Image 1 (tube, rainbow, N blue to C red):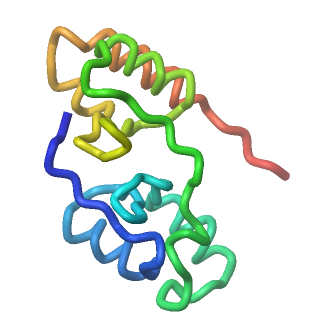
Image 2 (cartoon, rainbow, N blue to C red):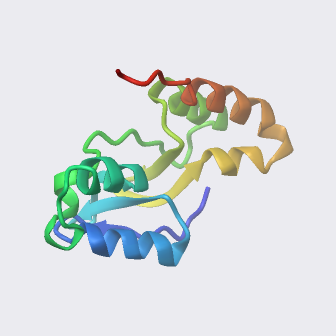
Amino acid sequence: MTRDVRTIDASSSVEDAARMMKELNVGSLPVSENGNITGIITDRDVVLRNVADGKAPSDTRVDEVMSKTVVTATPDMDVHRAADLMAKNQIRRLPVVKNNRMVGIVSIGDLAVRNIYENEAGEALSSISKPSKPSV
């Protein structure tokens, strides 16, 4: 897992979140209030829930567009269980939480870079990346 994870405050602007994602070269940021994880904002949230709706990123708060349901892991969770959680919930990033505080994040990439976990990463990714059909 990645241990040095930056978070963004729920009251920050979407523009600030996008800038932080660009600076860190990441596609998501955990959202925190008083040190507790309350959501996650992804580049997809920014585009679909803010820009595509014609809202100004500088005038929109992170908590207005973030994903509020956050699936988490614990530091002692087995990597196989983490991969299963990611697949079941169709997520690519899994915050790791201890005593309601974020201590890291596991991504599909973290699983893929370790040869021992290639199968888990592949299985999780195939479950996460179900092709969508355009609505007409």
